Length: 89
Image (cartoon, rainbow, N blue to C red):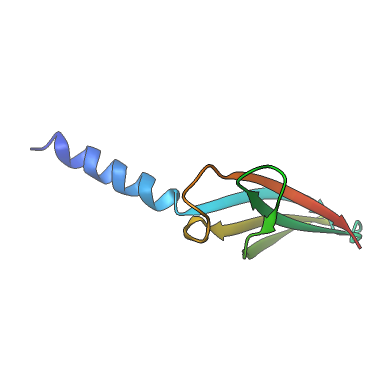
C-alpha cells in the first residue's frame, strides 16, 4: 500500500495543475501599445477570448513578469487550440 500512496498524491497534484492554462512572459513597461489576450479555438478559424486573471511582479529596469491564467473548465471538451493574441492599441 505504501507504493500506491505516492502515485495517488502525484496524480492529484497533476490534476490540480491541469485545471488552469498559464502563460508567463516578461513585458517592457515602456511598450504599452500592446494588449495581450489568451484565446481558444476548436477549428483554428474562429477564436474566442478566455476569461482570465493576471498576476504580475515588477522586475525593475522597466520590466514586469506577467502570468495570465484561465480556467480550463470554461473550454469545450473537444480538441482545443490556444494562442496568445497581441492587439495594438
